[in-house]
Length: 101
Figure 1 (cartoon, one colour):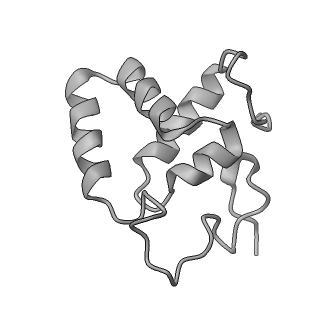
Figure 2 (cartoon, one colour; figure 1 turned 90 degrees about the vertical axis):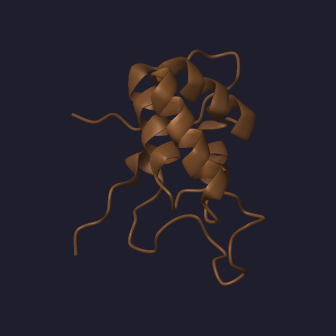
């Protein structure tokens, strides 16, 4: 059973489920770092450090290249037409589950 993921403070160690979700969100092209900060309280630099620690070196390099070229990952590079980071079909950010229709 999935447990809700709550925001964390920098002094509290992350649970494995939280680390997995952060990595998943970081790999998603359309999920900006602002969403990770909102849900987990981690800055972009902290996410990069977490990815470097948790991924294999080559995977981390591939991810960094992908992030640098992705226009939707950084709020400053995003189109002005996109003013949210949560899909309209999602429930509250808890586990980012798409609600049933």
